[in-house]
Figure 1 (cartoon, one colour):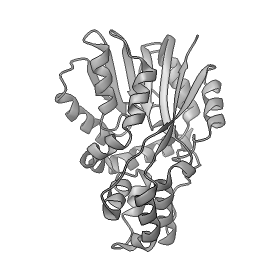
Figure 2 (figure 1 turned 30 degrees about the vertical axis):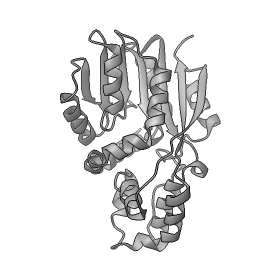
Figure 3 (figure 1 turned 30 degrees about the horizontal axis):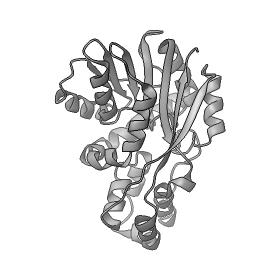
Length: 276
């Protein structure tokens, strides 16, 4: 457990480090994953009066949208492990005409809520970054009410997400060492559908549905491509910031190719119920 605690502290520090960048690049980030957000809302089916928990909220956009759908009798708990992200989400919540939004610092692996206290849990691109997603899925099951539902998205594999490969290449060409994208807490740690399904089943979600969602996006030029993808890149951001000057342009041929022709993101969206 001590190792997991250390990893969790590292995750919190990594995402606090990039909270400012996420705020500055918020509009582009939201546009790039808009199809994923819409699919999550469709699978979530929020109903008036429900209590819904969002984990890994980032700027809180998804949760604010859910708040409009559960109405004044419902509650949305918008949460993130990083205090910087929560502060940004709280500022955004002040501009939303919804008194039913709570913004909290919560760890998805140790959710500070009572058993069976929410109707649904939703998490957009967060579970794969947690050091122990199996524990996190079990925690979601614990806080869900009978017939509650869990809806989430994670990144598909690198063959569908060239942007991540290019970031990794820039790190390697500079002689630096980045985190293992397939290891615990890595970007692609839950990209395999069988692995994801097994983890969910093991946590008590026997009935799952996994869809693949395409989310095309583009950039004005190679420079903006680099800035928008590297600055908010969690644990990679600090490493990438160490690159001297514009040395990342050693991979400029690859960047240009990606910028021109590979503008898609692919994510897996899952929905499951605690009991059916």
